[in-house]
Length: 320
Ligand SMILES: NC(=O)c1ccc[n+]([C@@H]2O[C@H](COP(=O)([O-])OP(=O)(O)OC[C@H]3O[C@@H](n4cnc5c(N)ncnc54)[C@H](OP(=O)(O)O)[C@@H]3O)[C@@H](O)[C@H]2O)c1
Image 1 (tube, helix red, strand yellow):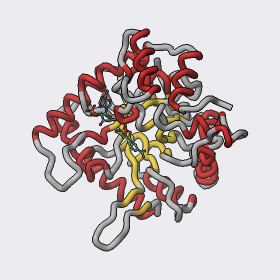
Image 2 (cartoon, protein in one colour):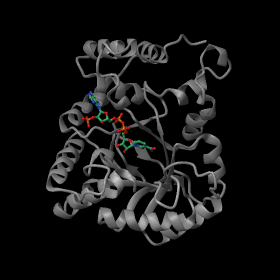
Image 3 (cartoon, protein in one colour):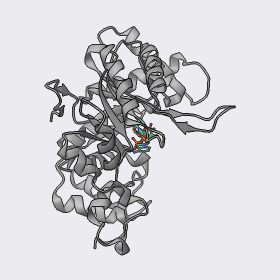
């Protein structure tokens, strides 16, 4: 199964599965990266490569920069690694500090400054894709376009995408950009159904649209119409469907896994892969064995009936 970004004749083969690096780099505090953290990251990255992952997803904030730093250390220690990976990172979230509340910042200065930090920590001169991590209430598309234009001209960033943005925000941002947005990464799994619900229950909210799901109206459709790659973060539902006794949906996931002689995680990923939008699940496990077991998902073709059984059971309510 190949998955390419069909853009500007720069076809990037990004594979069906993405590895999310948020679990790498040790704790979320200020302790330096240790050899144990490096060994852990090495095992996770090798497992991801073994199952065909090509694209590695970062953010400047993961482990407060240490996820990128530990990945940079792997790149320094293995000169052949850079050619085997595509790199994606994100900016735009600023943690609270003594002087400021936690906030979003998609100003040109912050974007450009963040990318310099990303490149330094990853020890590379270029990343393939930069994502705007979350919508900034003060975002100005022209300013984003100016920052991206400079980063692109300097050879620091290949493509621009977004994360956690709905259709209206993407459409608005796109008005100022001379290149298409290539990715939207949003939370999507059997535990986070808003973007799917937005398209199926919009005309009958009484029957169970979740609060907030309506905000996602048209988001999946916008991405498909414009050839954008959708990526699902939280694709393993953070382990919540692991125990069949935990919920009716976990039980169904388990039953379908048994039928196909695979793991519950593979069923969760196959559920995303079955969607016609060509959604790329972003796998966030830091456990090499669990990462390897995800390979089954790309061989597993869920039937329409299985897909809907999983969806409706996870909703906890029949469709209208
Ligand atoms: N764009 C955004 O706003 C955003 C937000 C969050 C994350 N992300 C990206 O998406 C990636 C994945 O997100 P995520 O980490 O939230 O979600 P995830 O992949 O759904 O969950 C990973 C977590 O679930 C645990 N887990 C998975 N399967 C399990 C099982 N069978 N049993 C027990 N525990 C299990 C993992 O533990 P183990 O490590 O022990 O396997 C890990 O702690 C991140 O790495 C990051 O790249 C993006």
